[in-house]
Amino acid sequence: MARLLYSVLYTLLLPLFFFRLLVRSFRAPAYRQRLLERFGIQQKTSGKPIWIHAVSVGETIAISPLVDKLLDQGESVLLTTTTPTGAAQVEQRFGDRVEHRYLPWDLPIFFTLFFRAHAPKLLLIVETEIWPNLLFSTSKQDIPIVLANARLSEKSFKGYKRFSELTKSALNSLTLLLAQHDADAERFIRLGMPKDRLIVSGSIKFDIDLPEEQIQVGKTWKEAFSRSVLVAASTHQGEDKILLNAWSALPQHQRPVLILVPRHPERFELVYQLAKGFSDKVSKRSLSKPNTNIDIWVGDSLGEMFSYYAAADVAFVGGSFSGTGGHNPLEPAALGLPIIMGPSDYNFRSIISTLRSEGVLVQVDTPLELTEQIEGLLGQNNPLMSQAGINVVNRNRGALERLNQQIQRLLAD
Image 1 (cartoon, rainbow, N blue to C red):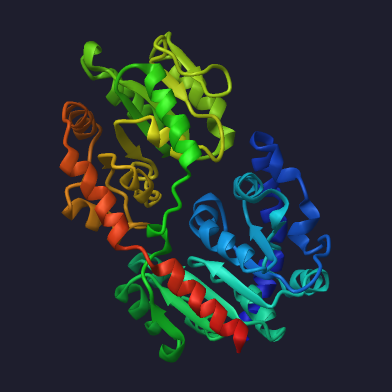
Image 2: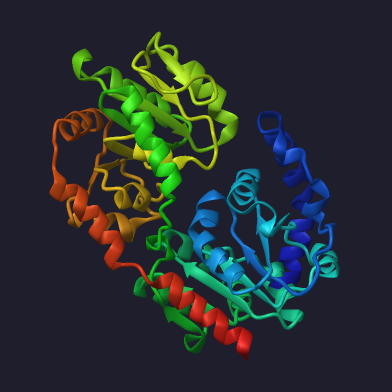
C-alpha cells in the first residue's frame, strides 16, 4: 500500500521533475539529451551485463576500479547515472568499453520498459540510492541487488524513518548491503534491513586509483605557474566568493595562484566572470595554459580533478561552506596535500574525522579562519603531514576487493 501511494504521488510530481530538468538544461544543455531514457525507452544491450548505478561523478570515480576489474574478468557492464556530468565521466573513463544509460524515473512502467531493453544478471548500486520502484522492479525480475559503500547519516536516517513502511519494504528487496561503518549498519538495521544480509566492509573511496598521466599533467602545470598554488575543488554556489575573498585578504606578496574548480559545469562561466572582479590576471582551462601571468585559473573541465590537485600545495574541498555536506577529501589526501574544509561535513563525517585526527585536515567555521589557515598552511613545508594523508588512505584500502568477492559469490550462486 505504501509503495502504491508513493507511485501515485510520484506520478503527480512527474511534470514538475520534467520541468525542473528542462530549467536545468538552459544552463547545462546535456540535460535535454537522451530524454526518452528517463522514461525507460532505451537502446537495447546484448547479453547479460552487470548493471552498476552510480548517481553522479563522485560515485562513478569511486566504482571505476571495480569496473576495470570486472571488464578484465570478461564481464560486460551497463552503467547508469542520473546526471550528465556522471555520464561525461563514464564516457571519458571508459569510452565504448561499457554501455551507458540514464536511470529512469522511479515508476514501475518505466522499469518495465527498461527491462525490455536490458537483461542484467546483477544490480550494484553505489552508495545510498534507495528508490522503492527501482528495487522492487529489479527484485521482481529475480536479479540480485547489492547496495555497496552504503552510508546513512543521522539526518538521512530521520528522513527515511518518516516513511518507515516504504523504506523497510525497499531495504528488504536487497540481496546484500555493504555498509561503510558500524554506525551506518546500525541505522540501516533500525530501518528494517535484515541483519543476515548486511556486512560492514569499509569505504571503497579509500581504494583510489591514482591516474599517473593526470598527476604528471598537474605537476607540469605547477611548474608553469612557478609559485605556490591553492586549489578550491568542487565548489558550490557562494563558496567561490568566499574563496576569492579569502585569497584577496592575503598579503599581496603571499597570494598563491588560486585554481577554482566549480562542481557543476553550468557554473563554469559564472565563476569565471566572478573571478574577473578580483584580479585582472584571470584565465581558465579552456582559454589558456598555466603561466606566470595568471593569478586565478578556473578549472572549466571535467575528469581532470587529479591534475588540479597535483598542481596544488594546499586543497580546499567544496560543499563544506554551502551546507551540502562536503565532498570527498581522500583524493587530495592520497596526493599528500594539506586539506581545508568548512563546517558542513555530513557526507564524509567519519573520513573527515579520521583525517583531522591524523593532522591532515583542518576544519574552519568562518571565512576569516579560512584565510588564516590558507596563509598558515602555505607557509609550512611539512613532509610528515603530507605522508600522514597518504598513510591514512593506504591502511584503509581493501573494501573494493571485499565488494568484488561478494559480487563473484552472488554470480556463482
